[in-house]
Image (cartoon, rainbow, N blue to C red):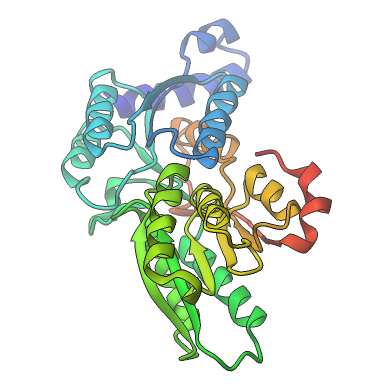
Length: 321
């Protein structure tokens, strides 16, 4: 049924171009996209949701948007609801990597294509989704590691690092840790002395950094945070402990949201690796292509950069999130 509907839509589009179908008939066949979002845990996620909503409106796509409040069970319920509603395409940002096989097989059985947005899943059968679009999280971790290695070039003593990880089991937390460790392991002077989840939130980042400071104090040379919100929370904890962020402790984070640029301009954050949340237009183009019967790439990577504090003031006016 779903394939028939998409085939009919494509045939109608072709017929309209040939002048045999009135555009008013096509207008009645509005594309419906079901999107399950993780939540609103950070500046990045809020910008990502806004990009998806505004892009859907601009593209004339009916968006059924569900906020999972960072709970996998809520996302699974939302996807099952989209299947029951017979939407044309399902897209979602998985809160964790594992545990999606059953619901994805249900979507496949219903002949509804699934797009993974921003985060991947850990499933052997990659026919359960048509495309994964988003950042290369491992490369983001590598960029963070390369920046640190370059900054500490020539330093002979041990470099003690504390790490604020993202949500346990999530793709960015797993991959950003992997990429960072891949780079620093080449030099034994770099040592990760504490590593704990801050769940990608500012409040948790502050709480965990307070615990790190109580346990390790002035032994800490570097903080590596898996996102800017946790880094900003940690900066508050460092200041409250009477230390100077970005001076007493070198701070590296990921996302490059406006809050990070403000922290860099204030001299409190050393560098932020970019991870763009503006996936909306790219997603809507993919949805339209799928409904038109086109094949889309299995992996669509977002282009991104890295911003040290020295360029923050110049780059800040250009930031869209």
